[in-house]
Length: 231
Ligand code: ATP
Image 1 (cartoon, helix red, strand yellow):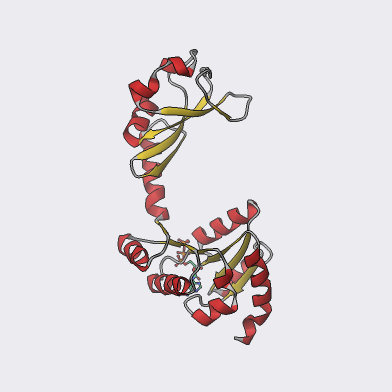
Image 2 (cartoon, rainbow, N blue to C red):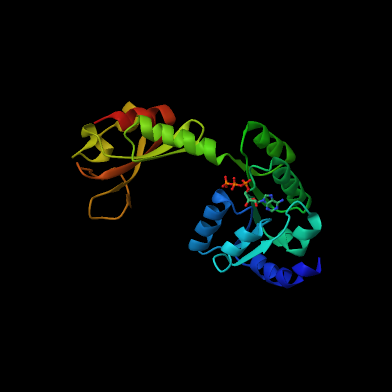
């Protein structure tokens, strides 16, 4: 364990800041870790592969090569001091499950884990992992909505409730949103809009959108999809 002692002091310091530990730096884990860094969050990256660890040296706050399935190792790296830990190990389902179970045993308050399939996800949920994510399935479903519809971007907030970025259809152009009655007639709400030159702004009853603008709509998935099809 001595080899981790140089890291543990730094890990402990990182854990005290706005920080996240990311275990597994494959395509998913590394994209997540880099995005966290870009938005000002300190990241401790852990991966079993030396080459991968080397490649992230200097990019993340700290990167360590370690086997995350070992409780002593995670303790040495002060992972038990982090408020949020992401298990981004996928293909090695056993390693993912063992790591998640150690983190739960260490009482990490918020654990996110990536699942590569239904069964894997179910086990993680049964263990008590707080957030189980299915990146490939979620992205596949999201792209299906984009491919099928006219939305520029689409996010299913939860099963059955969605948000979409679309061009405003003719029925709402040129009149204050409050007078369009679309909440009643189409079951969706326009939450924000952007003109060509301007930043996004929150929409209200007085907002008037025109051809060339972009709007953000939210509502039940079926209604959002139907509204996104309008021209
Ligand atoms: P992705 O789909 O995100 O690209 P991947 O297919 O590259 O992932 P995964 O099997 O999901 O790879 O694993 C992600 C990373 O997790 C790999 O870089 C791997 O070295 C690391 N990893 C696997 N097992 C362990 C472990 N026990 N401890 C630490 N890291 C591990």
